[in-house]
Amino acid sequence: MQSLLKILFLDDHEGIRDGIGFLLSNENKNLSFIYAASIEESLEVLQNNSDIALAIIDLNLDGKDGLLATQKLRELKENLPVIIYTMYSDPLHIEKALKAGVQGYVTKNAKTSELLQAIELISKGGNYFNAVSSKVMKIMLAGSLVNEHEKGDTYSLYKNLTKSEQQVFYMLAQKKEPEVIAKELGKKLKTIINQRSIIYQKLNISDRLDLIEFAKRLGFVFDDENE
Picture (cartoon, rainbow, N blue to C red):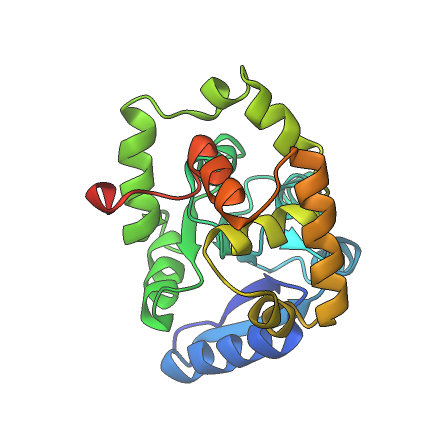
């Protein structure tokens, strides 16, 4: 009988996270998930479960960087395989994840079967990047790299946003309305509207069209010909 593959699933959206874990464990009975909603909780989980073989981590953990979790978890367990599971599909976030040495990158709009495939491949020593991130990797290799953005004022202004503001910025750039963003993030509509105003102020822009153009300069939004 095959032994259980114990997986740490770190995501602050508990309902979605637990639901996905339930679906995955139903698909593969050899998967066992232990959940965490914060970096601190994930470290405690790993300390108490040294046999965890793999970690799935969201990039935005209630305003904190999921890549920081990758670093801290690997201080406890060197070479712990990591799959980034995130809403972000742009060159900026993907390259940062690659530089952090993750083994997988799966976007949240992918089918659950893709995440399952990533888990199965990475648990055997492989790597997995889903269709969206693979496309972006090609663009990065063609020259659209993070360090190119870092040279300009655009990236400097973006870095002034908090992690929470960056998440709202990204969703606004995807043409989602504040009502939808509030529902997806589990926040009040007033909070999202206030964050939108702060984002506009910090980026020196005046409306959604300006924001989308700003996002394109960062590489967050792709024209149809690149899709």
